Length: 229
Image (tube, rainbow, N blue to C red; front, side, top):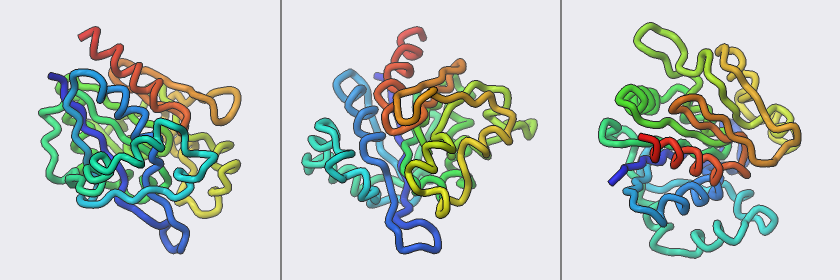
């Protein structure tokens, strides 16, 4: 049985602000559901353990698609999300895939998290798949190999675009612009021609999705790689 670890944020507010944030629920649900219907073990983690905050915007009627709504109304699933393990307790060597969800909360607790960085290197170095969607790509930003080279250096990658950040009306309160930071690390960044449509990049065993519309496509790409191995 293949094992997948999913890592969510533990940050519930924008730093220095009373504006709520957290996990963008659809980015978890669509990936989770894809593998939940197959023969996989899926374990949920976040940065601090216990309850995972959910971005209230991701629960608004215009954002809450039927699949996400089904999981949100599933008490047993929400109990799992409310009792997540801390990534500090994870054993990444046991997993075939690590997947990072988004929501703006991750911009505060993913980039400089040593346990996150360790898990990415551990999974990738033993032949596993590293995947992320939207702001979850922030987890990859500061990961370095044993030679001090950025993990995403020279890799084809996508992530939430500067244009999408502006359209989401978050530019003034985010700690950085994700697209700009990716480019600073010499990655080959690309994005869809139109904002907020699914877009995925695959570079060997690294799979990234641009936005909240992309998690199912990320899951499909991950599954394709798993089936080749």
